Length: 266
Image (cartoon, rainbow, N blue to C red; front, side):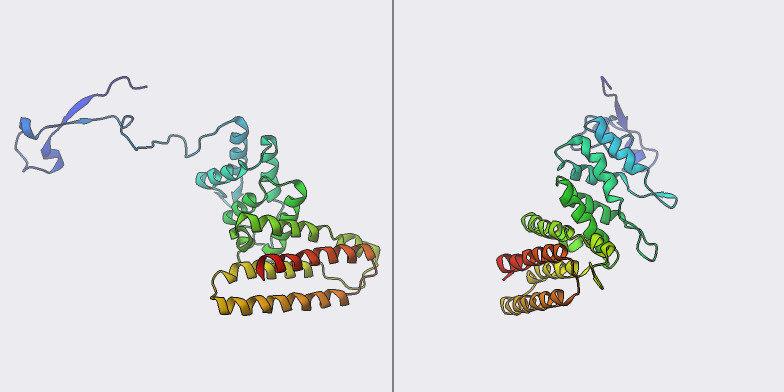
């Protein structure tokens, strides 16, 4: 700790305020504090931009610092600071490291591309503070979008929190449909487990698009979306599957999407 501040005189010649060769006269000499510690509105960081509240938070930061992309760190300290803020939504501090590990469950796409830091930050912010079944439902959908969409889960993450919460409940019902059992049992001649995600994305797109439209265009868009979902329901009915449990859970998931449309969009 600096107990005192040394005062020095600055020669105006050094500052280029007077022609060279002139001596410093008393009225032109100024006293300047040489310490920046007492300067108001100044933040001086040493050893990085992070300050940890507890050892668990530091452990999370060290975990993220070790993630590499080729020869470089995947996350900057500012990325890590943002991710630590997202983790504050998790009520149980001991679970925060687990949440960080979960976002790295996302696999590279068919071209070998891996998620960028922005995707991981969005995903972490969405799963933090949620129960395990909702987190895994979001992770499954994130993997689906990462394989197919330019900016995966961006549209969903930008929606208001109350709508996000309702839509995540729908994702949980979609995730409850046990397609893996259906495929392994041999009871499905031909099944596409991605159909429900496609329908779900129709809702998310509608929420994102409607705020950009005028009233007349928005009304037409809503009607069109309603007819799209009705058509999707007929398509689902035609997909062959003799497993009654799978079909029933699929119906529950679809009905929840239609209910969302009627209550929040139409």
